[in-house]
Image 1 (cartoon, one colour):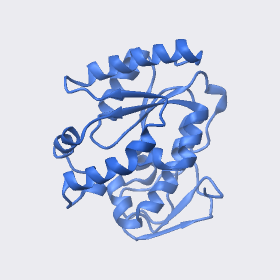
Image 2 (cartoon, rainbow, N blue to C red):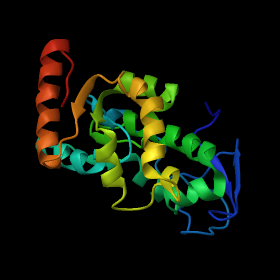
Image 3 (spheres, rainbow, N blue to C red):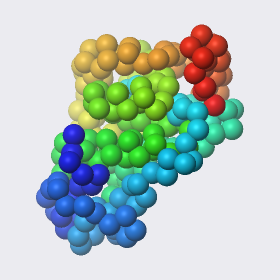
Image 4 (tube, rainbow, N blue to C red):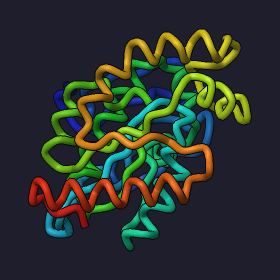
Amino acid sequence: MLSSDYGIFSAGCGSGVYRLEQALSTTQRPCHKGFWGFLFISGMIADPSKKSGKTIVLVGLMGAGKTNVGRRLATMLDLDFVDADEEISKAAGCSVEDIFEDYGEKAFRDVEERVIHRLLQEKNRVLATGGGAFMNPTNRQQIAEGGISVWLRADLDVLVRRTSKRGGRPLLKNKDHKTILGKLIEERYPVYAEADIVVDSREDGPDATAKDIKKALEEFSSTTGQDTN
């Protein structure tokens, strides 16, 4: 865990220098690519007074459909939707892929942990996380305390087909998708299985999967007594 809520990207994306320790401004925003100083994470401090119920946290590998399904689930539950990777990109002023390339995965995971912590402290919502987020024990603990985790499970062939349709996935860049995803399944699926709810990502569209999650949440609530909305 970091000792503060912030990290520093010296000289901005493209410099390849990342440090911890110094606090960052919570009001200024960086420019995209090549901003001159810090990674300013705007709004990093949560307002706990807005919190009620629990956030629905979607976990799973890239290609499982967390963002598409999450948006539809949020609509069904009348909640806001937030994508953790998008929040990180907004804060950094550059893409997740750029952060990976310029500073490495460790820097990205540091910021990811802070962003997820902040989002879980705010009002309940539907939150889609990156594929590696749930592998972080700190994230898992925070999600268990402030959210209800839902693993969107998909088999290898489905993930390979879906991830081949677009880029922006650092772990797959210039690599064989099937080989990498197969290794990630072996590493991550046993951990994803710790989620409160497991729902298979369906092939007949994100709406159908979102409905399955909604039904599973209702059953989970009736069984555990936890407020899912």
